[in-house]
Image (cartoon, rainbow, N blue to C red; front, side):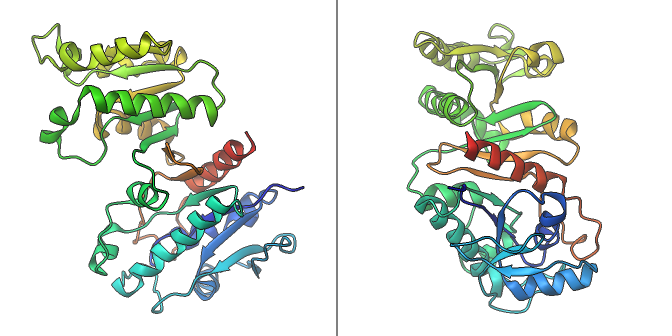
Length: 323
């Protein structure tokens, strides 16, 4: 029996998501993907880009003709123009996510891959929305999820995500670290196939606190949390100064890095991955990968959008689903 296809949501209709999705048959001809989007939107964007792409309606009981792009049609609320946001289509974006989530939960799809959405326009549509990660957690009734990005030979997970910097120190608690590290460790084992994952853990402060002279979070919070988990057999190295953690020798000895906050770990990874980074949501009962970039409204419909991140996200989703 063949493996179920991957679901690919095309994201914000005015952004580059549709442009990228249209390139899947050419760039990944052997991988069966079902793009969840408005079929007319894809046809119009293909014409705008000068792409000769055959669109075929998705059928659960059979694949599309060779070289065609399978489409699960979700209708737009209003016509979409490349580069022009329209709050009327905010709910449409969530409808595509719902179709992918429901299909993954039921087993119809093996995994879901998401093109970028625009948080602002969804909120402007009157729907409170903080991001893909939080929405997926709510829809799958998952209490805690962890954001991890992969690229440039690294996997970097985050203890905290979209917090103002002044709130980060208060958010770093022993219960939080315990929960995040357990999720990270479990998915490295069960989804990525590492029998005994080695995780580098960054400190919060410069020089990992310099023995308490630059902050005590490492001494009072991080190290005790790591010690408890080490006693259970986890391989946790740290807390390490973030400015020296990301060197090749250290990274070669690890399977993942845990950074304490968003801009501690992700600038390094995004510099190294050169537009081919991948976002993975850990802790979900389904597999979800995503691009690591935004909607790039200025590039939509121009033919200049780089599909590298989406292609890598699809490849990883397929690998995780196979495992």
